[in-house]
Structure formats: structure tokens, C-alpha cells
Amino acid sequence: MPLPPADLECLADYACKTGENPLWHPGEQCLYWADIPGGRLFRYHPASGQHQQVYSGRPVGGFTLQADGALLLFQDRGTISLWRDGHLTPILPGLPTELDSRFNDVIADPAGRVFCGTMSTPDRRGRLYRLNLDRSITLLLEGIGCPNGMAFTPDRKGFYFTDSFTREIYLFDYDQASGNITNQRVFARFPESFGFPDGCTLDAAGHLWVAFWDGAFVAHLDSTGQLTDRIPIPVPKTASITFGGPLCRDLYITTAGGHEKATEAPLAGALFRLKNAGQGLPEFPSRIQIPKE
Image (cartoon, rainbow, N blue to C red; front, side, top):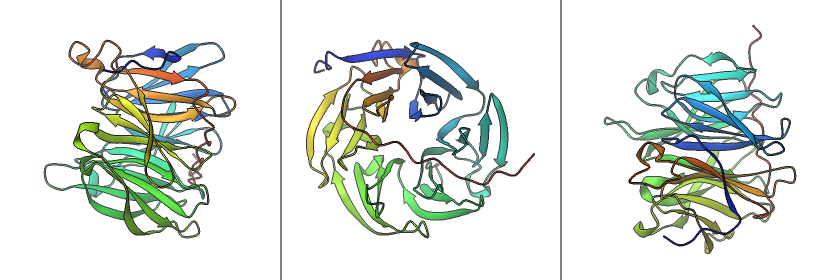
């Protein structure tokens, strides 16, 4: 395995089975991330270096940051819940079409809707939905092997979407007014030797950074989909990435395999940071209308 950069830091090791969905919280100046099957959420404060587990319960496939600072959790069985100050409030009790599945990767769009993927099951393949502002659900795509990393182009006219099992990232035309996506085409395709493209994030130059599961690296792709750099990570299952920090220049990386450290890596399941990796962009907040209690 190639040596990682000298300035790559291990920040916290909770031995996550599937460490995912790192998300910077500008209001709290901290990073949240999840261990999906373990049903755990964590928080890291760079200013103090302290970190803690803040939630334990049903699996959390992904989450967004609501405009008011609360977290919107996308869980198993199509359930969506609001997490605020340690309290969990279901806002969508479940989807009849997803009772045997769970949400995986999610992202808020520029208007505050949420694009959310669900996993394949033995009986059917995965799907991509859009959670609208009024909490209605729209089915966007079917037949997905494993829905993963998503991002919106800087001009807000394009949408990136990853199917890990096909080892492809797709680019769609995106209409911000309606939230619809059209004109699917392959943006990037990767060889089997790379592993599986997983979580991704976009930088201010409009370039994609992609974590590779079973690849032990993070890739940098230019706006044409060409690979321009590979950053080695000392864990095979490099799962997801995001930019954060006060200036949005630090790259945070989650990993998996913490339940099998002996065969994966000593730091499998840990959270890493690469300082001053580039100029990132803050993620859009979700603006889902929450009923008053």
C-alpha cells in the first residue's frame, strides 16, 4: 500500500463498520459523521480536538443539515427523522416500497430538497428518490446497483451521481426550479483495480474528489472526468469525503472495516483529515418543512 501524505491525520477511531456521510456544520464549527449499520452518529470539534458519540439507535444511511441547524436523518425502512439537541422526531415514518431496505447516500440540492438513494435488496435493485420541501417523495431512478456519491455543479445546472457497482459516475442535466434530472451520461468510469467509487464532494474549481472503497485512496477528477491525482489512505475501505473547517479547505475522510481491523487495517473505521487540501464548497442545507409539534 503506498504511503499516505505526511500531513494526513487520524482524528478519531470509533472502529466504524461503515463510517460515512461526513458533513461540516458551519453553525457549530464541527464535523458530523455516521457509522451506518451501527446506528451511531459522531461529532468532532477541530478547535478543541474533542470528539464524541452523539446518537445511538436505528441505522442512519445519511443525513443533511437543515437550515436551522438540526440534522435530518435518513434511516432504514424509508424512515426520515429530525435530530435536534439529542431528540429524535420522525417526520416520515417509512416508505412502503423500502421496508426491506435502507437509505444510503443523500445530499441537499440548491433549493433545499434532498436527493436520497436506497440500497438494493435480493428482490430488486436500488432507487434514487427526491424528498420535496413539503415532505412528498418523488422517485427519480430505478435499477441502481449501489447509489452513492452525489454533487451539484457550480453553475447548478448539472448533477453527479455514483453507482458503485457499475464503477461509474454519471452526469445529469439538473433543473433547480423543478428538481428534475434528465440526459444521463457517463462522466467517469473506473477499472476494477480501483475498487468501487463511493462518496464524493465538489471543490470550488468544479472538480470532484472521490473516495474509493477497496481502493485505499481518494481521487481528484477534473471537470472532464479525467483523473489528475490520487491520495493514498491507510485503510482499504475509504468510504466518503467532504470539505470543512473555518475556511472550508480541510478534507475530512471516513473509512470502514473497523469490525475487521485484523484483516483490513489497524485504523480501519477511523476519521481522517488532510489539511489545506484545496478550496471546498459548503454543502447546501436542506429546507424540508417540518410540522410543528
